[in-house]
Length: 380
Image 1 (tube, helix red, strand yellow):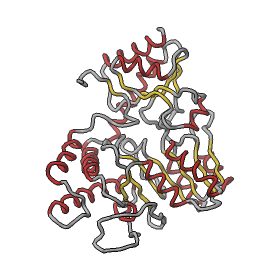
Image 2 (cartoon, rainbow, N blue to C red):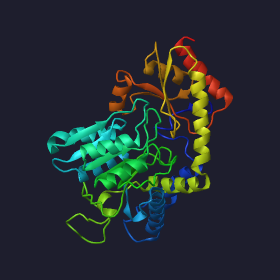
Image 3 (cartoon, rainbow, N blue to C red):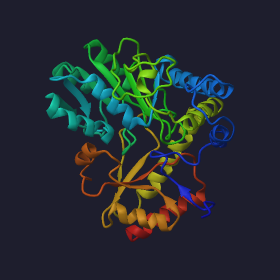
């Protein structure tokens, strides 16, 4: 199937297409390298080791926590599960927000009863945001052991003051866990959190099936799985040193090659101009779509945001609108976006929303094509 006429607007789920250098790097692994970094000492292993180290350094610099504390995992889901299960203890108090992805919601739900967790979920402010003053007050009131929060909503695009949240947690002696899956690659994520977890396949422009956990020195995380690590020692006990302790099993080295290339590409194509162009596009789309009958836009408060626009139609289910757009060769995301708590607050828990997430500015014809397709579903 030709993709020449496909309008892809789902970058908040998975960015596409990837930069050519990402594809070239992964192809290089498959055609020229073919081995894991820590599975030998030959020339090819040395090549793999250098590229994996480059990816660690790039992520460490991005998050301000150092490349030696970067562990690769299969994605943010594994990373958040690993972190929460490693940190939480019986009777712990946990503070989180209603904006969280299921990668936080479901592990907390699974651990709440067995560990007897005291869990507080901060609701959105009336304007759809989450003010730093409200977070500070909740920390003082709840006295959490662990604060886990997302940097931005994957439904509305609202961005939160992660630096202020992390500082308030640190002042209260609370460990902060930050999910940067929606912001890494778009916004600075060096905000002082104790643990940073993210995925490679969104705005970082890397391949899927890869994520990372980065922890500052002094944060103790126990490995949650054991197995082969390529260690030169014949040990029965799983190693405890970073990052080996968290990378049991054969690593996704081709994806790491792709991520290393994506990080180098980002150095040559700074995020602020790309983000500004996408945000302008979101505003143009919002202005046009907001004039259609029956369209409700779910907007974040004024201030920092990601290029995400969610909407509903009065007389059409999001899945129906998604099918209309798909027939017009426009790829968006319809449904609940793995954000169960937020949909309850938005009143969209029954069917979710349609989410539009551009990764680059659209041409006038493409923008009109999207608006006309939504208008046809709206009866306009």
